[in-house]
Image (cartoon, rainbow, N blue to C red; front, side, top):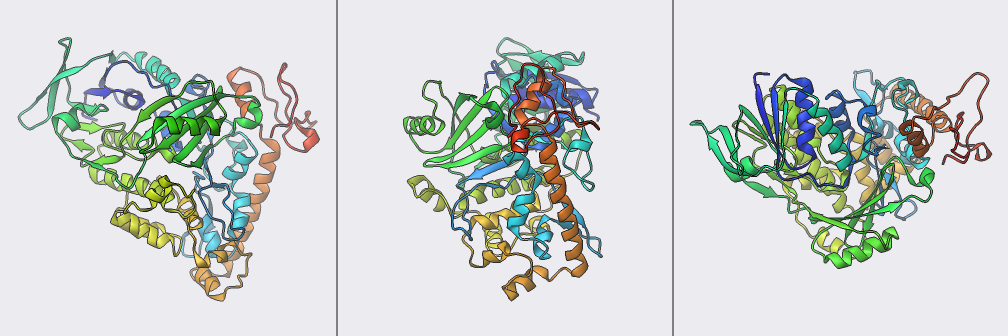
Length: 553
């Protein structure tokens, strides 16, 4: 990388994520200029790609998970967001599986995915729901085991190691990243600096900035996490995402009463009268974040307190703007954080765009702006589809959401999904082949179950559909060998998932042992005492002294 003097304008965690990646992967001189003092004490639901970004920055899970009170996140559980065509009831579903399971290949070399398993008539959707490891491990409150890949649930086909998503405390992770960055000799940190002047070169590049205390800082490349350069200096247009109704979030915390059952390895998003609430467990407590728009704070606070049953803790409030800037990178400046674009936080997409942009800049990729626009369009479409599904509460908020007109690309996706599962080829055609796929085929497929579709029952039937036309439609691209092979692999996965649930530790108990340095005893030839043996759950482990034996579910 030719850039040797890189400056980061920072107001949140995205600046520190950028800094640690640059320090580990380049030999450039890095200066972080912080606007004010860091004050974000919120909790975030984090996608696996961001955790992988930290790994690529030289940080192992041991370096930051215990200190940031982090918990694992297999995905996001949606409550009251869908219609079940069999029971005609609204129920829980895990849409964000975050892992691309492959059942082998066809004779033509095409991968057989979860969606292919459905279409080859090898397995009905309800059977897949009972197998999907991320869903089953979440419901059983089971933890992945860091550093022990053979005890992860990848089976024989998924290449280990695989990084899971997490929940983390922003303020605590900030302290970890700050400490690590300051250990580098080529890092400089300037806190509470207000920029009063920006000087450009003749060709329009940013040459230097001047702060209120007279500091003059020059550089050959800049990452803008404050909007000082892309917004105020270059005045790049911001296009609001009018199809997102939310613009505010209210947060409250609740102490655990039974952490082994309450600290579950997933985020949970629940439909409420004026928006939705994301429930995120950390190691220390449970965090409720209510996302809403155009409602009085007093109304939201009352609903949030009643929902969380927390009446004596303080609430915090913040606002956000969903939209995209006309360019993510301009001249020698690249946006990070919410500056280049921001998507409704209902699916925990924080920092994904930052990690993509930073890597693309360092690797000097072509067409960075075009790729960024494709990725954020796909992300915003995926999130917005949740608000277009049929079942919500019949309140003024949800009625207003339904009336919001969708852009052309969102309409194309919705029209496809309401008839058939969307394919990767169709997604590439709509979103112009982004270099990274944030959401997987199975995640797009599950949208079908959020719409009231006449022939959707076909996807719930057992193999050998009663509906001949639907059966032919599903089986058309596949032959008997494809169906048989997919069935065999699925049965193997089902067996693996059951054994994993029997063997893996309880989520909070495992974190407690890890964070406090207690040993964990795994199965041996002679066997160890089973926690939760009276219920048949658990695994062969002994709790450390001081931790009572109890069910691990």
